[in-house]
Amino acid sequence: MTKRRKTFCRSVLFLVAAMLSVSLICSCSNKKDTVMKIGGFDVSFEHYRYLYMNIRDELLSSENDYTAEELDTQIRDTVMKSLKHYASISELAKNKKISLTSDDSAYIDELVNETISDYGSEEEFQNALREAYSTEDFFRYALELQQLETKLRSYMTSEATGELAADDATIENDVYKNFYRAKQVLIKNDNGKSKTQNLELANKILSDALSGENFDTLIEEYSEDTTGGDYCFTAGQLLEEFENAVSSISSGEIYSEVVETEVGYHIVMRTDITEDYINSHFDDLRSAYLARRFNETLTEYSDTLEVKKEEIYDTLTEQNFILGSATIVSSDSLDTK
Image (cartoon, rainbow, N blue to C red; front, side, top):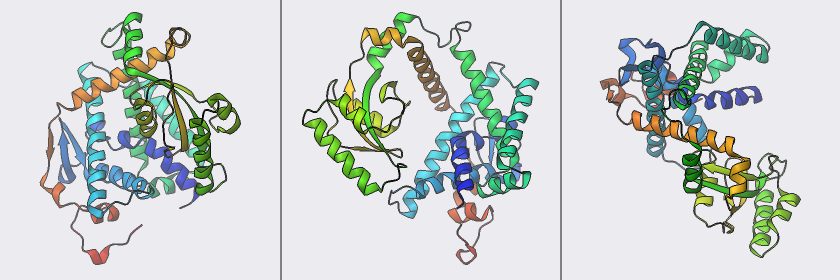
């Protein structure tokens, strides 16, 4: 896989859930290749395949030792969660009469043209799309859904509508109840050293921290976190492994193990959320609170959506998705990518 394709795939995977929900905006799937309905919307084989294959590639690049059955189950669960999430965006936007305007379309056209320019030519752009199991239509629809989500969030969190808005006292109470603050020493994966070297260094730093060495001194000496390493967050904002480590310890405590994530190795210390900190970061905390409430609302709504799987869904295997055909194929014809 070329560096260009890897970069593109990472960008596309950022849009994975959105791009696979194209049918949730345009209802453009052909009835004959519909694999399921979520609420009132069709999900085509093409849409489902895109999400399935990109998540598959991402999981296979991780160090998890999945069996074939476990891998397929994990992929399908993730696909379903993403599709239901964006189905709720589409239906809530429709219920609230929120839609894309001509200005939105012009903005999306501009983004597509900028992406093509970044690749140097239309041909290179199309090649990258194909290698990422996508098309230009999918890419455009992904941007449309992102824009729709942005408008829906803005509407629901604005003070004008009051749907999710909250006064300062409510937000402050929520911060004390549902937010965490922590600092870290980060040793990044892409620092030019081997994984073994990075882990050895991380374990040494953890040992020094647990032995009582000043944590801020360790941050200054070793950390590769360019943001400074002081985080205040609510659930779902940061990497899951990091959040789990912080939430499992008390303020002033250092997590007893090195935390490994896709970014690298983290030595984590939980710290206090003080009144001074809240006052000086209130706008950021308000934004984080509203983002969490918006996502909670989407999750609650998505749980009400009926999922109806078509008969073809249960016949589809990994081979169908690799070959890009909903037709049953023999194992002899499989050509892995």
